[in-house]
Each structure stands twice: as structure tokens, then as C-alpha cells.
Amino acid sequence: MRGDLPSRIFSPLHWWLVPTKPANGENVARYVVPDPELLVLAGTMRARAEEALAKAETMSDADARETVRTVAASYERLAQRVEQEISRTGEA
Image (cartoon, rainbow, N blue to C red; front, side, top):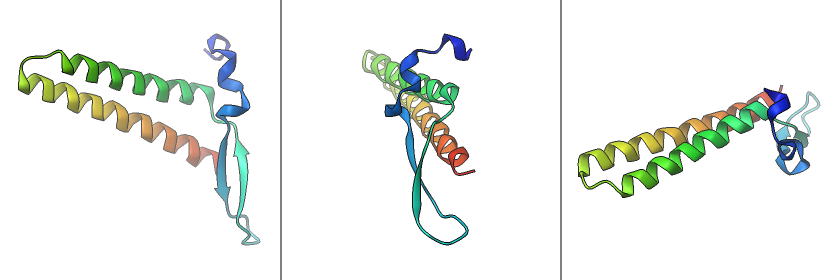
């Protein structure tokens, strides 16, 4: 799959500055290049959240609209969890 990813995924704009605390106790930060597949996954989850919110706005049934908004919020939380995983793996 990595061969199919756009080259922009590998640009320095997508590097994350991760604070770390080495054994000597100094506070330092280092740049981490996240796994491109995780970046794509987070972006996909955000796109699905936006799509669900847009669909919810067209619904006339209040219960259905609220259900779809809940689904959108779940997709957003998934995107945030993926980003947390990217940060966590960068600290290793």
C-alpha cells in the first residue's frame, strides 16, 4: 500500500515535534516521521466524519439526524486516537 500513497505524505510538513525526556532528565523535542498508513487512516476517519455531518444536515428525521451525528463524532474520536498512536509510537 505504501507505494500507492501520495508523495506529500512524506513531506516535512507532516513530521511531528514530539517532546521526550531522555534518561539524563533534560526536556528535549525531536521530529518524528509518522507511519504514512496511520496518517492516511486518520485523514480517512476525518473525511468520513465530515461526510456524515453533511448527510445529517439533509435529514428531516430528528432521531436519524442525531444518530448520524453520533456516528460522525465516533469517526472524529477514531481519528484522534490514531493521532495519539502516532505520537505514542514516536516516543519509543
